Length: 61
Image 1 (cartoon, helix red, strand yellow):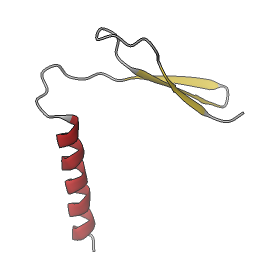
Image 2 (cartoon, rainbow, N blue to C red; image 1 turned 90 degrees about the vertical axis):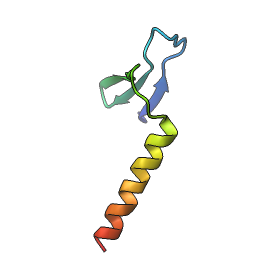
Image 3 (cartoon, rainbow, N blue to C red; image 1 turned 30 degrees about the vertical axis):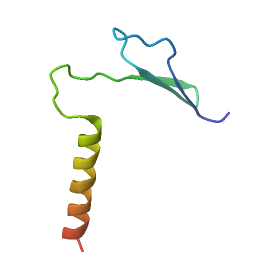
Image 4 (cartoon, rainbow, N blue to C red; image 1 turned 135 degrees about the horizontal axis):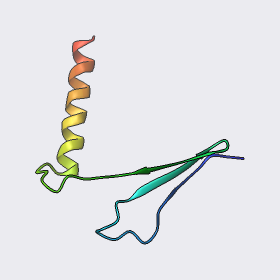
């Protein structure tokens, strides 16, 4: 049986999104929680993470 990843339908602002992944006979559900006090955007975080990764790659050369 192949592994399947699905998202939970019917997400509302009160319901955190989740991902369900079945591996073998075990089903995992991971809920995402976001801080309401955060000031960083998703785009900003991804950009910062990529910059840090590139910086580490350059330092390790």
